Length: 65
View (cartoon, rainbow, N blue to C red):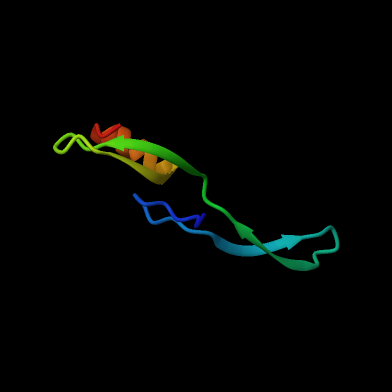
């Protein structure tokens, strides 16, 4: 499953793990992705969408969820 939000476009970013000795090793920061079903009010079809937590908040604010 690709970790990309369909609403906001958020995707994994990269950074460093830092040990106590400040040694740097690469790591990934993954977005908080959920699968949600959204019903299209016009056609009545149900779509499964991958949405981040921020995207869910946006959809609720706009009245889609």
